[in-house]
Amino acid sequence: MAIFLIAVAELFGTALWFTPNAVIGALQQAWGLAATDLGWLTGAVQVGFLLGTLGIGLSGLADRIDASRLFAGACLVGAMSNALLPLAGGFWPAVLLRLITGMTLAGIYPIGMKLMVGWAPGRTGLGLAWLVGMLVLGTALPHALHAFSQAGIFDLPWASGVWGASLLALLAGLVVWRLGEAPHVAAAKRRSPPVQAVLDFSVFAIPGYRRAAGGYFGHMWELYTLWALLPLLLASALPQASTVTLALGSFALIAIGGPGCWLGGWLSQHIGSRRVAMLGLAGSGACCLVYPWAASLPAAMLLPFLGCWSALAVVDSAHFSALSARAVPSQRMGTALTLQNAIGFGISVISLVVLVPVWPLLDKWIAWLLLPGPLVGLWLLRQPILDASKTN
Image 1 (cartoon, rainbow, N blue to C red):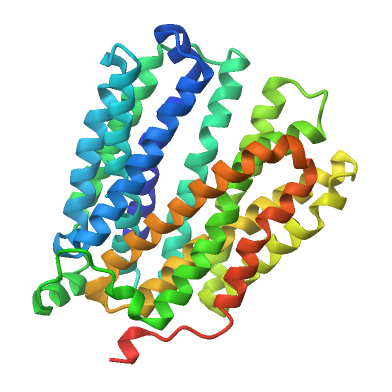
Image 2: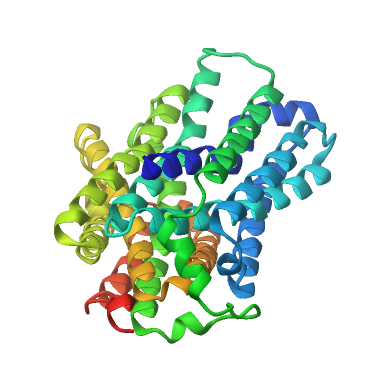
């Protein structure tokens, strides 16, 4: 039950991340925003998340405060900053609120991972797979909302959607607050020495953590850029498709990663997280390699290929965190996972900024620029990663 509650709380909490995506049209009309302004609103959340994860990771806060309290507090502050968005009255106050929301998400996503690891000992890969699968569905959801809006299926005031996301975040915080820490985690924390509080990079001295985190960094070079490109690849494959069809298709191509994560979690119970991660990297790398030729296939064959690529690109995501959590002592886990998220997310931003703008120039050959990520990840995971609890 704890695994299910944390996974649902993660979905509700990270709903704050994508709120503006669902109300883009209304924001443009309400505040007279240009397309470039909307990019600032999205980018502010990304920058906030990066700053928040670096701050939490380097300060040791992730291991000095109970994860359940940090998660609940982040949900509360994030819900408040998000709920104020309709009252911002203009562009720059909204950017500041989205920056704050992004910082609070640093206390929701990676800290949710720490909670899951604590409540799912021996089933870390499975638990994190459910958590990341929920995040994938949240990532895809704005495309579905956009499709429904374009089709005229609903017509609610845009502020109601924003406030609804805040209510979900509050519910997530309440659930996790009531759940608390796993009993064995709370007991271990009482026995552990105080955690270093400032600029803690010490986890990178652990070879297994370096390899697992490095594999995650290669994975992140590909994943978010692929998600950003999928609507463009779909539009190229279906040039006559309507806006609604393209939006629903984009939702389906990204959302398929959710069940893919859950399948990977089940598979990790049989072959281990490292092998699942390597299968995902090898599969998505193969898709990067062959896409320039696959792009000329008929749509009936190309669309399943894109769906398979999308699923393979994310099926391994949870397992890098599972491997990192296994490689470090339990009292360093929060810092390790938060720093891994921060650096990986920073790499994804670099990939997005560098690769997406060259899509019009490279077209289908852009897939080859995604390929180094999976290849580096595979190389780093070539050796087994030792369990810290068995080496101390």
